[in-house]
Amino acid sequence: MAKQQKLTYSFYVGGVQVEKLTPEQTKRMAERIGETMSTYYTLHPDEYKRFKEK
Image 1 (cartoon, rainbow, N blue to C red):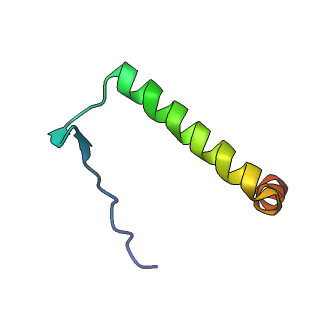
Image 2: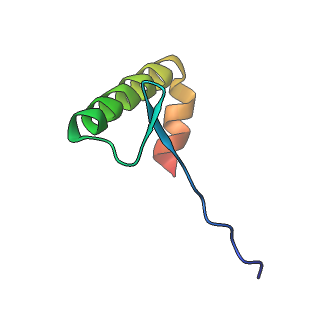
């Protein structure tokens, strides 16, 4: 088996790289992701059905 490459990432807030998000930033990010997913699945109910089946 091939060795898997480690995934890396960087956070930028206001154009500045940060090492860690604050609890407030994390909460807001989770809210925005939830809102976006809700909108997407509302517009694509067939995709939501496929998601629930998995």
